[in-house]
Image 1 (cartoon, rainbow, N blue to C red):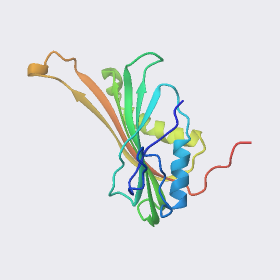
Image 2 (cartoon, one colour):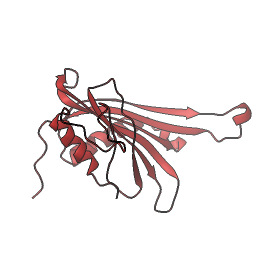
Image 3 (cartoon, helix red, strand yellow):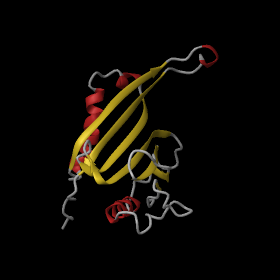
Image 4 (cartoon, helix red, strand yellow):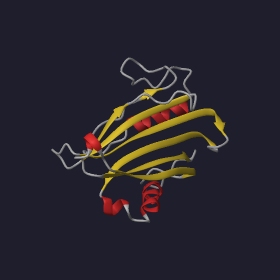
Amino acid sequence: MAAVQGHLSNGADGPDGTDAGGEDTPPAFRHAVTALRGVRVRPEVELDPTPPPRRLAPYSYALEAVVTGAAGEDEELAEGRLILLHDPAGHDAWRGTFRLVTLVHADLEPEIAADPLLPEVCWSWLTGALEARGLPYGEPSGTVTRASSHYFGAMGEREPSTRIEIRASWTPSDHPPPEPA
């Protein structure tokens, strides 16, 4: 199980990207970054720090994730990115001071990609996961895109492929759920 690390957009990172900022970094943001760094993940999930976007909010923190097959397998099943944005002044569209943004890509079997309910099912994975963990959120927004690739010419020997992409963002509630007893 890996501890989470990442990079901050305000230039306050230490040389290894692990400093949550100096005294000018808002305590709420430092607390959120510390919470992300302390999260435990399943063994098949690999997390790595990545540079966050610098223009979306005064403070941001980003992680890349790769999901592999069972232990000992190198097959990459999905990849993604999670970005924590913070604007202490608040943001009208977010209706809050924090925003979480995610981008996930995964290859699919053509039969699954052809399912007309696939976009709704993928969106429900996100909202269902948040709700199952009792994580209050608001202002959800996003897209589910499926792409099919057919190869020609010098690439003609490749098998056709299908891929799903989920782009989503939401505002976490300012009031976290109570700690379990």
